[in-house]
Length: 333
Image 1: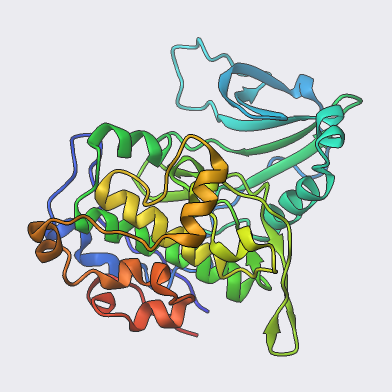
Image 2: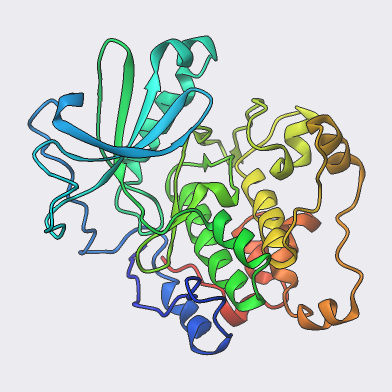
């Protein structure tokens, strides 16, 4: 697949949700970008000829913490974040994983998968770039591009919900990433699609981060390989993951449906403080859409956005759903 990314006007979330007009008409222009920017990948890794260590970087601040890892904003050790001239300072996001916690929580395979997959997908316009990895006695380190726009989750909470054009815009970019992972990267299942794992770059485009649950499943003959690990975030798990009868990369399409539902309504369709109750809702209850005539009138052409929740999994069925042809990208080889 050739790949180019048009300079499209994206939703201006800094000033509020932009209207439907010009900001989303160019979604078709993104349709060839499922792999990378051909001839202009703009991937400039840190020097590959040297071995890095923690002293090569200056810690600026902590960006986030997780169960066994934390992410810090860093810059090269020779840089000064307090300098008046910030134009030449390159910032990175450093993911620090404590070895003892990785082993204790049995995350060794997940860490290996994350590193390998991030290395393979470097240069995709909607996935954060892995620049370098290294280790010391206590920790593993991944140096990634810093994405300055923050989590899409923050904007969703700020505005409570997105209008349909904004939801379509971001859904289209997510679809491109999933199509790329599933078809061009040997059946990679992302398995943790949620607004907290989607960042916005300086131009307002999506960047996938945190590939900790990603796994390359591949195919056996003409059938996708199944895996049985229960992983992900409860609200976004597909029924087959909960049933533990084997699942494929198709679970990402279910998560997309949950995510778009949340974009448009402001809340996920299944929720409870107890994760076990969430699992019960997912496997036993149908997806209930808001009982509001105005809502259904407004989103009557958006059934493609919810197609994954009605059993339509995969790019082909999503693209064929009503309303898809208006603003969603098409696959070209």
